Image 1 (spheres, helix red, strand yellow):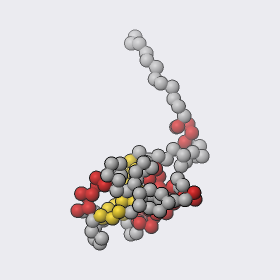
Image 2 (spheres, rainbow, N blue to C red):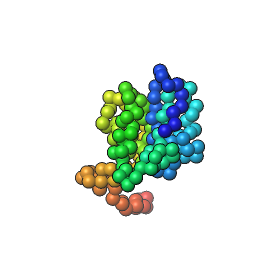
Image 3 (cartoon, rainbow, N blue to C red):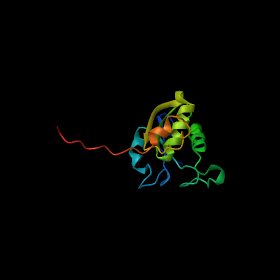
Image 4 (tube, rainbow, N blue to C red):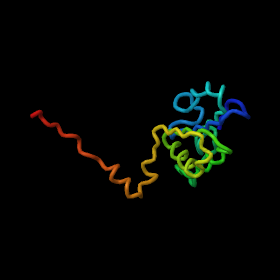
Length: 138
């Protein structure tokens, strides 16, 4: 994890990346958010097995619950949460566990298609649909 900004007093913002980057990746991670450190305490998380974090091992490969556990530890008394792609899934789970600690929630292209696949409302909404048909004016 990379921490930027004041250690005390500034509101924390936890950023969790997707599967094609890491926390402070300059191209696809959250490194471009560094100017926000003037007003916030930025915590750029490296999900298990990415960036500077240790190898996740087989137990945590693609495990949203492990990501949520890591975010939950960082929430403390409260924080703003930002998640991208698969990182957003762990952020959503952590937010659902501790809504009182979430100051705001930003989800960027959450890759959560399988997170609720067994819920009866999900399959019909994910089923392919026919393209619209064109009608001629009468």
